[in-house]
Image 1 (tube, helix red, strand yellow):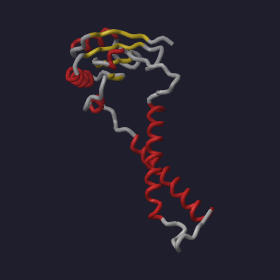
Image 2: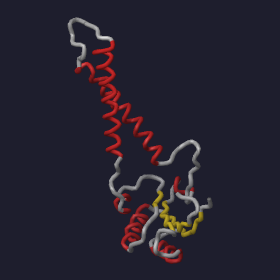
Image 3: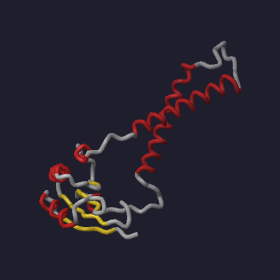
Image 4: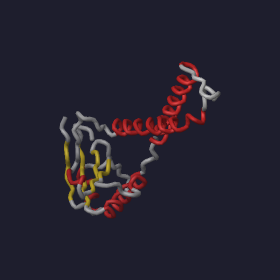
Length: 176
C-alpha cells in the first residue's frame, strides 16, 4: 500500500458475497487495486485476473544452485583437493554424492524461497504494516480501489460497493 494515495474501501462479511462482488465489479470494467482476506480464498486470484506466479522458476533456479554447489564441492574435495584411495574405489563416486546433493538442493531452494518471499512481500524487521482495516486479519474481507488509477470517482465506487453487498464503505487516505 503506497503512502500519499486515496483509496475507497468496501468491507464484506462473507466470502461468497466477496467473490460475487469481485466478479460483478470486474465485469463493469472497474480496476480493483487489491483484495484483502483473513485466509486464502479459493478462486480469488482467477476472479481478479491475476496471472501465474514466477515463483516456481525461482525455486528451480535456487535448487539448481544447490545441486551445482553440492557436486562442485564434493568433486573438488574428493577428486582434486584431497584424493584418497579407499579400497580401490574411484575418487569421484557419483552415486555416493546423491544424498548430499539432494539435501543441499532442498536447503538452497527452501532458504532461497523464504528470502524471495520476504523481499517480494516487503516483510522486513524495520517495516510497519499498512492495513486498510485491521479486521482483515480476523474475519472481514476488504476490496480496495485506488482513486488515482480508476476512471470512476469516489461516489461511483461507493455506489458500486454498496450495490454488491458491502457492509461498510469508507474512504481512506494514507499520509506520507
